[in-house]
Image (cartoon, rainbow, N blue to C red; front, side, top):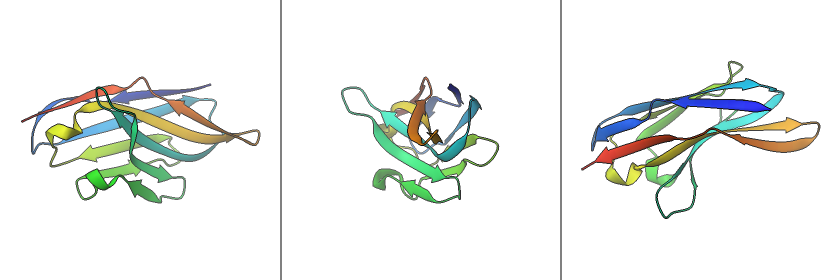
Length: 119
């Protein structure tokens, strides 16, 4: 099993910044990517940003230019720097780890951290 522990959520005013952190531990084998997803009330969980084991990044259009993902290296940690935040960024943010286990693709999720942006 893999455990993901997130931190850094909270309340921020529009235009402000927050930094999320996620540390992975446990049975970590061949990590393919780590990332952040979010889920707002009444909406489906959506991708925010991912980073592969070789450093390639991918962002949702809604956060490009404002959010930066880093880490995902051998230290099995990933960060999300969120700048110029908007009320629509309000959601529960989940850390994700994707790895190969004995030839099978597995996804693990953190417990989620609340991010609230006030207008």
